[in-house]
Image: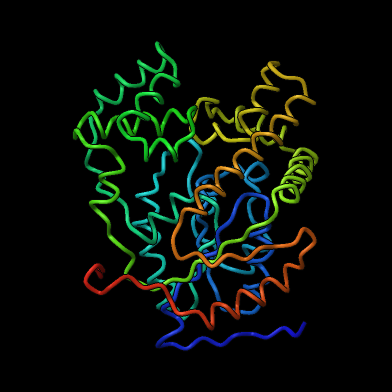
Length: 333
């Protein structure tokens, strides 16, 4: 296939943000690298874990070589013990989009964190609905009653949010119930009421693949991560003083490896659990992304050529009508 370098138009094309989304293990990084070889882009990573330093193997970060070739934003930005929310990402990433556009380059959002992408493009509700006492009370309830009890309550008061939260994701369970107990209205209500759509047009392209093929890719990638030193990386994080209770380390790959290091699992069981839990995570990502609007889906065969897929995405980017919120719903900073 002939490779071409796309020249950007300073008054039109440069305003359109390209978004590449899809589940873990599908090959977003490889495809984005080929796109970056043909289009002058800067990559905005929409990954809630790649933002953290020292977590390279377990998050499958873009290589240092790739990051030297192409500017990446929101990668290696914070230590693992610093919380970072989707709302903060949306606010900061919109500023980065403007800066990239001013450099006459294409803002290229790549990631699998659905909430980050939604917050960036559709807006996020106000962050002022907080109460430390309520939050701590909910955490104490988790200790006494278990996460399952809080999840059951959330299903009753906010089934829409419950559908997008894993029953054992304590942080998000507590946050959703905190908002409900403070305001008397569910988190999903506030998401709908306080939208702040992105002030730029965007095109969302989603990557999909038959489940058996994707799951085999995931299994192979997990084995490659352990071969690359995931155990050593996790041990190093703990030796640096980062608590295994951190939300950043409560991540598939790291949490199971921590159990291995604490002699709670043998190595074989650890690896198999990481495979299983990664497959389950990919399934939840599929469910989230399939519910998103205005996604142009690209179904990939198991043995696809990343360069060819990159060419196809570039053609779509040039031909598709941008998805732009009505002017009356937009706010320009």
